[in-house]
Amino acid sequence: MNKYRVKKSFFFFLKAFMLFLLVVIIAFPFWQLIVSSMLDTNAIISYPPKFWPRGGSLDNYTEVLKMQGGAYLRWMMNSIFVAGSNTVLVVLVASMAGYAFAKRRFPGSKVLFNVVVATQIIPSVTTLIPLFLIVSKLGWVNTYKSLIFPGVASAFGVYMMTQFMKDIPDSLLEAAKIDGCSNYGTFFKIVLPITVPQLSLLGIFNFTQQWGSLTWPLITVNETMMKTLPLGIASMKDLNGTLTGTIMAASMISFIPLLLAFIFASDKFIEGMTLGAVKG
Image (cartoon, rainbow, N blue to C red; front, top):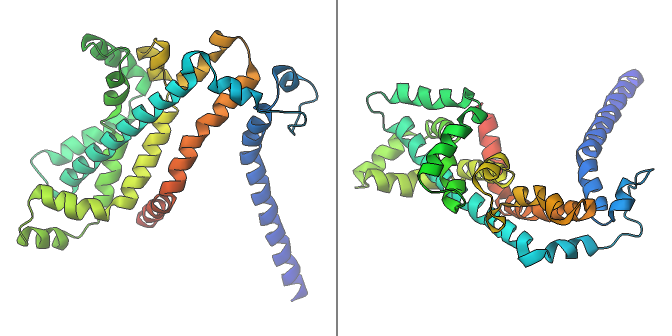
């Protein structure tokens, strides 16, 4: 019995230690970002490295918010508008397509669904030039349209929503039809409320991806006030010289919208993850 308790205690402390080590590995870069955002460039690049903001200040944050012409705040508003608009459209398109593939079968629907899923194996880099040529011919360069619309058709989103909507009982949809609901009425009044957790999950995934997007804005935007936050931060070196502390502060502020989005949608996000795990 004592041997069993010793063995059980050993594995308990081993698991606790591994979890603590995992938390440290994940949290340390974020902590170092906070520390560096409060120090000047000389302190950041000094040796030995500093792990505590002793003698630090909020001057870097003030410098960011006072950037020439309010550029940083404009970049943040651009990112909020672009990521938010794109996410709303992605969720709407993916949910409608998922509903059609899962519950409104039509000739060729299976083949079309397989084609949509197959597009996920195509590296996104290979489509950049053709997509840019299309955007350029439409006259969308340096506009919000070039940042919002190209990513609206999400193959991952369509696949995800199709799999979730397959679990909706057909009897529920038939009952709605008997009550006089049209296809649109059934979708908006019955299907969407049921799939709110999954929609929240897809929305947060997409918003996070769009918020951190750099390559596509780098190609389609070259005007300072049209830049998104990642592109703006990447260009701060050119605007202000090598001000590492200021760039760290700018990066730190960029986390705030993501954090708020997760806090407000955390319950639905976790519920969606749980349902996805149970389904899998």
